[in-house]
Image (cartoon, rainbow, N blue to C red; front, side, top):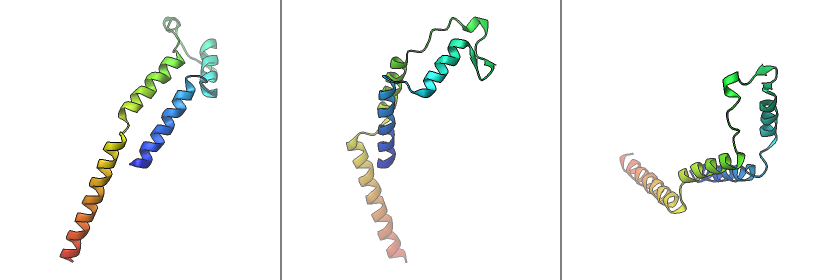
Length: 99
């Protein structure tokens, strides 16, 4: 659980950096949207061309906030780990008495 939490924190850091420099795939998507084609496929119908562009700073800020709200805080993580250790020890003790 701790390892997963650390990986998510790393992903949040990448998203924070993307607010400043969106990255190569975003640049490719922006160029495709500008030309209304991606690899020969039409991207927008006539009625969709007036859709406002996505603000990358706002997008990545909200994405970071959403993920950070789901992260475990360190106190809760420690409580869960302690509970797991207690449960594992208890089950081991019970199994040793049965066997």
